[in-house]
Length: 103
Image (tube, rainbow, N blue to C red):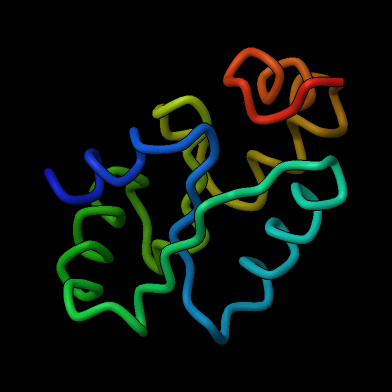
């Protein structure tokens, strides 16, 4: 859990994903389209990946634990949460407040 928390706090937007997860790619693509440069940790390519995935599953309360998106060091959730924030107009202000975009 400590590893996830430390990594999530290092940048404005941090995404934990796996290289083969299409939903992770969708979230990353959406954020990049807004001008965000997220830090992406692909758990299947990290030696600590399994431990981080277990910690994320606990935080999210579900498995699979990817994608897990942190904005401003806070867990926002997965694809559904990001898309809901986008559709309600809350995502851009959240990204601005975190310093992820300057529009």
